[in-house]
Amino acid sequence: MNANLLALALAGYGTFLTAADKPNILFLFADDQRADTIAAHGNPHIKTPNLDKLAAAGFSFRGNYVFGGNSGAVCVPSRAMLMSGKTWFRVDTASLKDTKLLPELLRENGYVTFGTGKWHNGQPSWLRAFQQGKTVMFGGMSDHTKVPVRDLGPNGKLTAERRGEKFSSEMFADSAIEFLKRHDRKKPFFAYVAFTAPHDPRMPPLAYRKRYYSQPASAAAEISCPSFPSTTV
Image (cartoon, rainbow, N blue to C red; front, side, top):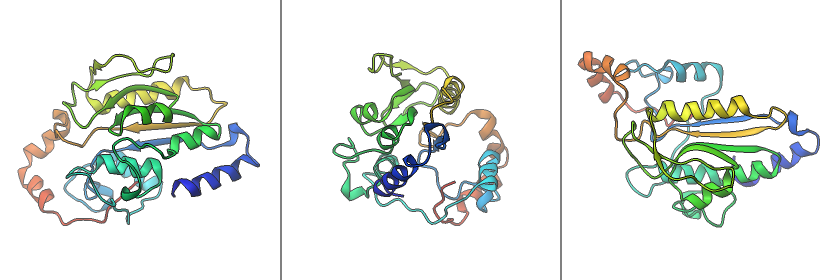
């Protein structure tokens, strides 16, 4: 749904729903994850139990494709198009300037907006999109165990950069859980959780890569596995 259609939908909501009735939105965003890396969608050589549960309990849209990219990685344009509802050719992917973003639109319709994780589209756009935020990474990539992060302080300004003390996925998940626990339930929320994984450097914790190292035949088969349609869960 593009931003204009979403605006109309939210405008309609406002005519008959109170703030407490509006659905909460928890948006989990993987970074540069290949469409064929989800077991539930047909890859027998990989284990993704949590994604499989999401696929089983919800809907999978399997005809989604990235419209273009600034480089070999598609993280910047993917986020830009997601947040703006515009195609790659119609938005400044580096800054997201001169366009209303999804969190801004939700905020105007009574939502509390929270962000954590990676944002590679400029600090000004993040600041106008989110009212709250913790462990935010501004940039493209880093060691997943030493991610440079910043918080949004009570004064509306970003804190000094510090180094994360946990693996990136765990750190961002913990920040989201903390927000959910303290959030005022009388208000709807939009929580944007942007994991940096599996974007390179590809260095998952040992417990998660051990299986593939101990079974090289399966790992090789996974690499040669035919491509699946682009997938979003």
